[in-house]
Structures are given as structure tokens and as C-alpha cells.
Amino acid sequence: MSDLSRVDKIVADYKEQKTPLIYILKDVQAEYGHLNDEVLTNVAKATNIPLSEVYGVATFYSLFTTEQKGKHIVRCCNNAPCHVKKSKDVLNKIKEYLGIEVGETTPDNVFTLEFTSCLGLCAVAPVMMIDDEVYGNLTPEKAVAILKDYKLKGVSNA
Image (cartoon, rainbow, N blue to C red; front, top):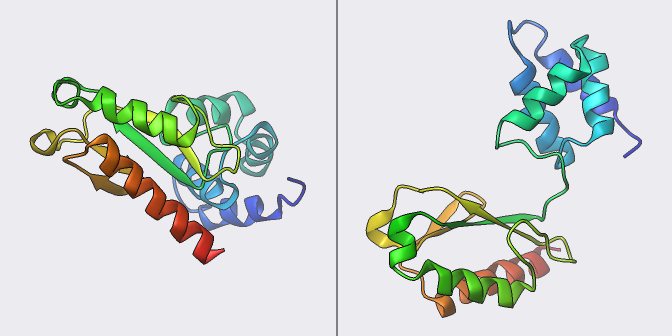
């Protein structure tokens, strides 16, 4: 990741903000996909904010990631209502289909699998979220069919 010139442009866009760091990190992550050490160091230099503070914000908020993730983030709810409705079966089938564990990314960088707390859709449990799209009333088979659709869309858009 040698071309970090876009970091300077993003920082400049927020010069008039009183506390722009979260906005800057949000935009930088959207640009680069994650906030690795090189990017965070460049943000610190461009903003004149100590690296420790930049790193602290980047690692405190769950919406930021310091590691590269897949094109699609699959979040499986692990709260009680989903658990009671057999979300574990759904999760196990997803892990089997993707060939990864929670917290891992597929070798082709298409999917990252994560846990999430309640998505507020207990009435349609079990639930998963892919990127910003929520899917409820899941069965193991339905979850895999949804993932296959994402994979097909990714291939056809490539």
C-alpha cells in the first residue's frame, strides 16, 4: 500500500471540523478497506494528532478494522433468541460452506465471518447480516443459498 496520497485529501476535506478524526478514519477505511499501521501513521502525520490517539480511536470503535477483511462481511447473531431458534446450526453450515471459522476471511477474500450482538429482529430469528442487508427466518440451507447468490453476483460483476 504505497500510494497514500488520498489520505491527505481526505484529511483536507475535514479541516473545518472540530473533531474530525472519526470521520477521517471512516473515509480512509472506505478508501483502503482497513486501517493498517501504515495508513494510521499517515493519518497521524496528516492531522498532527499523536499516533497513539489515532490508533486508540481506530481500535476502540467496532466499525473500524485494522485487518483486511473480505468483500462481504457476514455477521451472525449470537444472542439468546437466535440461539433458541437454532442459530448454531445455521452458523455451522455457514462455516462448513465457507471453510472458515468466525473471525476469519475466505482465501479468495470474498467473505469474512463475524459474530454480532442483537440485530433487533428477534421475531424473525435466526438472523444474519451481509454487509448492510439483513436476512431472517434462516435455515442452514437458506443461509448457504444466500451466500451462493453473493458469490455468483461477485463473479458476474468481476
